[in-house]
Every structure is written in structure tokens, then in C-alpha cells.
Image (cartoon, rainbow, N blue to C red; front, side, top):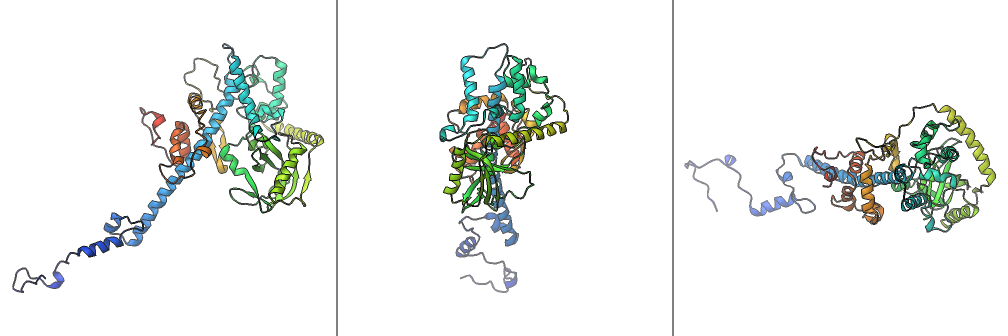
Length: 462
């Protein structure tokens, strides 16, 4: 026990001026335990911070939220990157099979010709093997599906007939955009209307925004849980639906020349297609009308059976099959509307398309340079241009990844995203540089700038 020095000692000081005694080891341990977080980790900034506890707690909460938000955006960028990559390769493959392959100076081999034909056929036959009752696009609309820009098939058919008459000796799409028919401008279907009406083909991620499910006897949006209601629009608004070969129901508003039955499955096969109306999730009317797929009565019955199997009561629903007369009447009405639309559309300058057969070009043209000028709808109705990926990069990655199919994120990767090393975040580095940059910009994450001498293909891998 320490004794205080006598008052006469020079070391003596009143109690109020004496320095505080250092805490004991037990007191020190107790104080540190109080500053330890719930997970048992000590936060030194909390112990040494002069700020009040409330401010320190708020700062810590903000840091946790910011890290969560960043990881969430990185995970979202992986989904966006997959969608951009799907759009890029879809455009590149169709462009290669319809336009770019043709070269006057180099005859096409039989193997190359069959590869092109099989690719074009697979565009309209995707899903046929999954169901014996599957429908493919009507022959008139095949031309729309294999067009890299998916211009409305009804408009393309007028130019297709002119191509058949011309006997030009050039493939149709080459003749239409680059060859002898590039200056042809039909009065009934002007080029301005042909360019304006491009049908939207949904990608794998975009398609989920249009999926509905039968639940408790009503039709409900799968992601949001909102009941299907088609009464909010005008009388001219038409709601269309398709059921995929895997028995998934997709529905949305039809937009002439922009969004049709072929949009949902990107021209793939369906089990059923038609129109319907609904109020608060209850189906009021179902029609088997679809000009793109021309469903039979058997297809229509399959859709009705699907609804009944899932608890949907159709006793009060108006059900109507479509006949050839319905298609004829609709066709006449459609032709009248298209004539009016053609008169409204003003003449625009001739579209300059990138040609890959021209020589002595200083820079390699991008396969998506034409499509990148227009905005494309991504998941959730957001707008973003297509990624401008060079043709060489796309072909290299198609050849290297064809067997593995590693870019199908839904089939190959885990759904966990919270870790910075998680598969959904880490897979972004596997996409081309242009896709990664645009995906990060899309989710408001600025990509790291690269130096002029840095290899762009490795700039965002870490």
C-alpha cells in the first residue's frame, strides 16, 4: 500500500491536483469488452474516437450500408453483363449467317452453307424438342426472326417478293442492305417505315419481367405479385400472351411493329399463343388469335388445360377460337392501318450500313455499330444501348466458350452475391471489356480508368 508523502515534502500535492491512478488490468479488460461489437471484434476507432457514441454508431451503419450497396450493384452488373452479351452474340451470329458471309470473290463452301442454314433454322425452332405440340413461327415471319435487326416481318415480306423477282444472285439481306436492292424504296412500304418498325426480341433476363403464374385461381405477375389487369389502357390496347414449351406464361401489351407474340421467346417455339383480357387477376376473355404462330385448336386446348390444372375457373370466361376468317379480317384491318402509318412517316435520309465486304478500311467495323445507335430495353424496363463489341472479340469467345456455355449465368452460377469473391460478382471479369464497362456504367459504378499502355482485356479482372 502506497503512503502519501508528508506535507513538508516537495512531492506533496493536494488530492484534487494529483494525476488519476492508472486503471487496473481487470478494469482495462472490462472497458475493452464494452467497446467490443456484437461479433466479438474490437473497433479501435470506437475506443479512441472523440465523437459521441451515437455519431460513431451512425458512421459504422453508413459504412456497412455502402459496402452492401456496392456489392449489390456489382451483382446486378453481372446480370446486365449477361444480357448485353446475349444481345451482342445474337446480333453477331445472325449478321454472320445472313449478310457478312457473302463475298463475290470467294465462293461459299457446302459446309459453311449448311452451318448457316442450321443456325437460321435453330432461331425459329428453339424449343421444338421439348414438347410434341410446340409451334414454330409461321413461315411468313421466319424472315423477321433471322434478320439481325428483327425488322417487322410483314414489311420485310414486300421486299422479299421484289428480291424473288429480281433474280439478283445475292442473298436477300445482303441484297436489301448492301447489294443491288439497297436503293429500292417501295411506296407501300417505304424504307423509313421498314427501319422504324423493328420488333423487340426479349433476352433471357428481360423475359422474366413478363412472366405470369396462376395463383389461387388468378393470374399474378411472378416477380411483383401484382394481379393482371388489362382494363387500365384504351379500348385499342391489346394484351397478348404465349406459353413456352416449358409451360411458362408470358404476357404484355402488343405494340404494332415493335412488340408482338414473337417478342417473348425471341422467335422461339411455343405451345400456345393468343390474346386475353383480365380484371384484378380474373380472366374475362381468351382468344387464340396470333398472326405470328397461327395456333391450332389443339394448342388452344392445351393452354386452357394448363389454366384449369392450376385452379383457374373458366366458367365465366369468354373463350373464342380463331378461324381463317378472323385472320383475313385482321389482315385487311392491319393493311389499312399500315397504309395510314406509311403516309405519316416522313422520308428520311438513306441509312448507311457498315459493309464488311469493302476493303481498305482503316478500322474494323463493329457488328453492333448499327444497333448501338438505338436504345434497347433491359431488365425492368430500363433503357440502355447495346454493348459495342468488336466482331473479332465475339467470334473468339464464341469459339472458345461454345461447348462450356459458361455465359449462362442462371445455369452455371450460384445465386449468392454478397461476397466480393462470390461467383456472380467474379464472373463479370469473364466478359469482354466493352460489356464490362457498359454493365458497370449501367448500375452507376464507374469502371477503373485504364492507361494507354494497359491491356483493356485485363483492366477489370480484379
